[in-house]
Image (cartoon, rainbow, N blue to C red; front, side, top):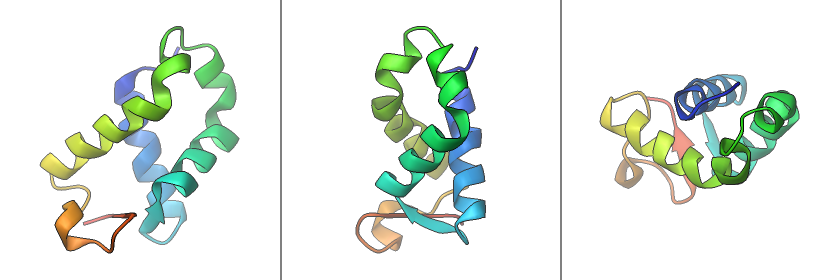
Length: 80
């Protein structure tokens, strides 16, 4: 069963696979294409993961793993 913490790892993995930068849409597509079964078996997270992924990105920004929004082009998430 996946958790909100797992979303953080999946975001980092997606960004690594996409040369360090991607849009939210591309990250969500990556997560769905690679972790659909995990999401389907994650209980309530299945219904909220696209919302929760935004919070996970905020946590990653606070921890310095993703660049702050003001330092990245609009609409892109980038690894630090």
